[in-house]
Length: 218
Image 1 (cartoon, rainbow, N blue to C red):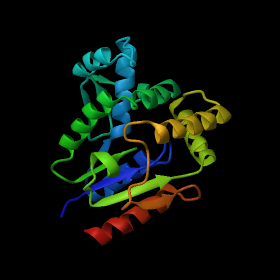
Image 2 (cartoon, one colour):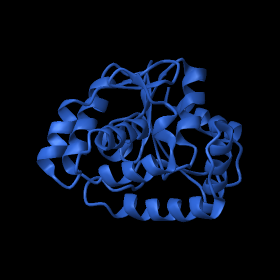
Image 3 (cartoon, rainbow, N blue to C red):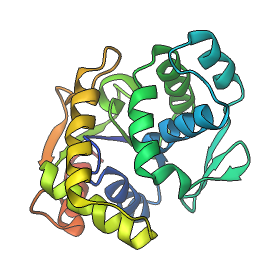
């Protein structure tokens, strides 16, 4: 029996990393919705779109094509932008553009279509509440702002991206506020989601706990 798994949570809580590991264990497909919003932000930047102008946003969305490959590459309009969408600038821009109703409607439609056949792990901010409200397993993965800032700092180091730990923490706190207080689909824990605080857990410990929850459902 194949199911859909929704993993929600704030920025840098480890959602994508945990989702990828779950996919490896179950031979499922990972749908990184955060990467999709980052693509929208990057495309808006590249096309000089004023995201506060709905007409410009709609025109931009008409030319937005996103492919998430099985080997975790993110393709925007035929170009590999896997690393480009992970900069701090695009991270904040994606939080801004995700507040726009027309953007969310377009991407949610894309995401729901992708997951129709089951066997997907989808992570983001509103998967369990909006995108896949009928997902058989829902996880809300969180961690302290300090722990998340350190993870993002180490991730940036690995990618060769310069960053400042204090700045990263401040940006994470700001993004949490934006995500939780936006008008459309704010970040919140679904009523039937299982809360996991990963502040003091290793990735393996988190994955093991999620797998235990999944095994109870399958």
